[in-house]
Length: 456
Image (cartoon, rainbow, N blue to C red; front, side, top):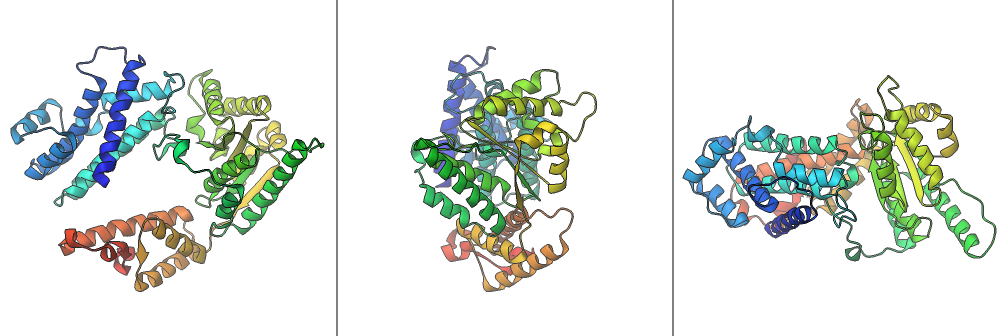
């Protein structure tokens, strides 16, 4: 099944390549088609990882054959290694040329009404990541050096996207808007989903009250009655990992279901997605983000960073001023939520008189308790077809009681839970492979996380 998904991702990337070329994004004369270059770069990544242990074996040869229908002998592989500098210094620090064209197309908005919604570059980097992970999973002899090299390579690609404002959290899945594949949820279903979230009792009360107000005002408007103008813009305050983005995403869908906004999508940005380093560019960048968010919610995470550095040459204030004007110009089809740490968000709102007047609805997200973090862990496990053994449950409860009691400086609520689970899954995989006969493992063995996986 994983191979089928990867094959589909390759197909989509090749289709994107043709789409970029047909729309005239590539001005230079290439040695081959952009699709051909991309296929070569995919193979380069596999060869790069394979040569980190000093040799190219039959398993690696078969992996390339199965995924790319290309026969590369050991002799040819060695030639390619020299020609393409498939080493840490060469390939490991070089941005692939096809990705540069994908970024040019997306960041430069080169294609009008882009069918991929300017998310091609992010989808491509995710495909690189999946390819590397698939190779390592198929290679039972994979060394730590190969895992580390893939991690650094993918981080390099992500950082490159971040420079162009393309690595926003709403892009992380790399998926496109295919509304026909997403069944429409009723308002009642969406509210039930919101209210089923672990913890967040006061947040749910505030959000439900706000939704009720919006529903009634919308009904009065539809029946020809006078309705009170409600300021829809909000401030979400709280520590990292407390569910601010999750609630904002649900709120966008609920608002769409009751007719407050047209589309019900969430566009999430931070400072890097709004601010540029040259005069005039920031206003253009903010305008593009606002255009993308019309009919939904624009979620500005860590908004305080826009005004925290007021030194010469900083254009954060320009982003705020442009955003305030956009909120006025699009008062009927744009909702803005600014989010961040409680104290720093107060400073942000005090930095500009216009901010206080635009944002008068405040929702506070409290830290999760140890019991709530344990519940979140169980929920995350269930969504990924994992479960904890009885000993693992005891270990997990103890871990979260200590974590929530100490609350280190890096404490990040649900993000800590996610990291905890990801480490456990990785430890489980290592444990099962070392035990041998992994290919004969049944569902139960592959599903259960033991105490040693959590504590490893």
